[in-house]
Length: 419
Image 1 (cartoon, rainbow, N blue to C red):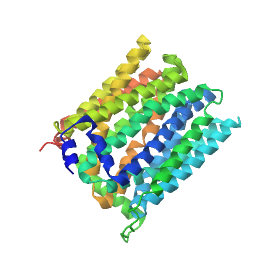
Image 2: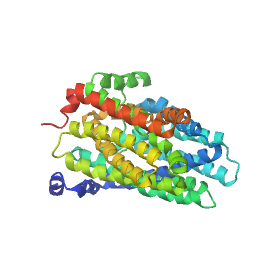
Image 3: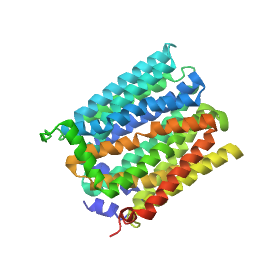
Image 4: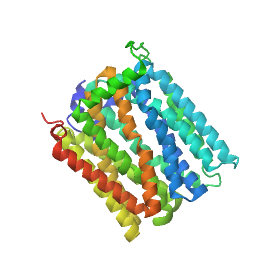
């Protein structure tokens, strides 16, 4: 515990001290594998659908196909996560997702793939993820000391950001080979299987959940009512909503920027993802350092506002100057600022939510986070009607505006982390 106390003083690498927890360490390496596979799957999927259709709207349709079940079923998935053994549920969902990717890769390899195949499998994986995500959010706090929550959330975020450096770059290289996107889907399947195997080795999370004596609907309503009566939760969920609908939609449009605007091809698409991931890791380390000296509310608001500005500048520099270095710089800064406020939101939720409601509350959080595909749809529509740059600028302004409103009117958010 001495090391933990020392780490809390704010060293950049102190975040890794949370890996001293054996069960969390197993979970984290499994998470690393599955997210790496997911990143490659996403870049392969987006490139495949755009290559098959040459349509920006089909990028949006694919995101919508994955997003509808993830949104519709996420709260139900949160209720299930509070009722059943989360470890076994994660093993099941990861295995099913792997099977879906094996099917998709095989269709590509056999050269019988159609856009409708991509949509159907995206829908199936989105349905499974609606149960997987709340379970993962609910189980990892059981694997650590609550005092390490900020570091655990940051380290989980580093998985997502770090794999965005390596995963898409590798995915772009894979796509550029004669085998196309098929190997990318197979690699994604291996990642899901690895997470399933890692969860099978974790013991001590199999205790029977106490029965509430209520039905699914009543349990759902309990989670909703808890959030409805907590204004700070509403503000944090609102920020996540705007991030998903407007902020992160730029990721869906990166193939358009890479292929048509900056003209850097599939390998360049991987590099754009990678640069954003590097920024995300830098933002993660900065967040854990700043959280010891600056209020979380300040970090949250400043990060969201900066994210909106950087997205707008990325779109403007790409469309008007056609400058790859400048576009890369703003993508890097967007990655930093996104981490600043999204890690703060997640850690605050995990610290404040009661254990018995964790699955449901994080399921509702997951619903707002999983709105990213809906955001992809609106961004695809704007990009088709006007331009990809216009869509990203609209998203950046929306995120920035809502963050300013929250900062102005939510005293609880402003005072987060202030003693």
